[in-house]
Image (cartoon, rainbow over all chains, first blue to last red; front, side, top):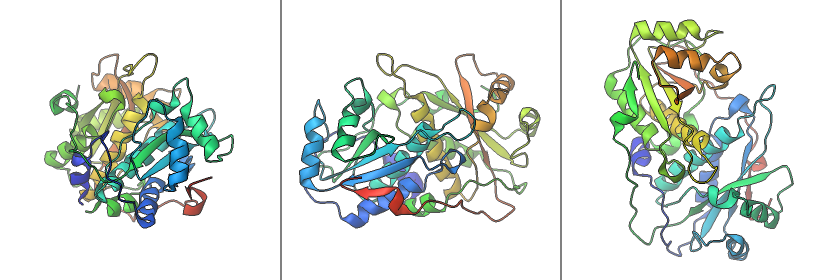
Length: 173
Length: 173
């Protein structure tokens, strides 16, 4: 799939997934796309755990409340370390967001759908921390997002967006 | 260009640019790619100003110190508004990072090179604020990043990265 086609046709998918498993080769490619994103001062603060073992998926979906994406045959968990880039500055949020966007495009280009689940697991109930413990992640890693990966069982629809001219300008505001 | 090809071949380019102008059609496509990125609760906090007027470019490059990307025939300035998504949460950093990543891929797919200049203009000397004033951006918009757009005059090289297996795992850390 071409770059602009993937960019323009990627939408957040919150519907049911078909049960078809996702080959390891595809999950690896998706994580490779995540690793290829730039990071502030090349600190590579982001890492990934792909989960396709039904027993592990069940444990994770058990702590995700309210339930979302629970029919996905695989998910990719996004972990970050708040590494200082220079002085007091860290770009770990920018780093993982760029990695996530790369992975969302890779997912769509492989024929799957996904959705960026972050706020849902990083609120005061700290679902992401529970997921990190299930996966055995060390303390310094924070699990900030997960992406379901699977074939859509329902139509994919995009959200309503502002007209381009309200967000894009030339040479002055 | 295919999605994975763009993702894997995009590198931060800090060299000189050829003077060839960038057609408006391409700058529009790049900003369209930025607008197509997801945003937390669809708040669309990010907007863009493409600059291709040599007089405006000169004014902007005048305040960027130390000098970077000053041979670029065009740049895209990224602006954000810290809109609340829900309660006290805003995802404006994630939003603009995802938009920037989309634009970097669009830039590469159109045959140009770029680099994510953020820390350079958001440090205590607040270069981004000076750029925002030159462009006439309202107070509530923060200029957080700019992307040069142009054809590379020098070879493009990628950075040294950690081996994939240090960042990518399956089913547990």
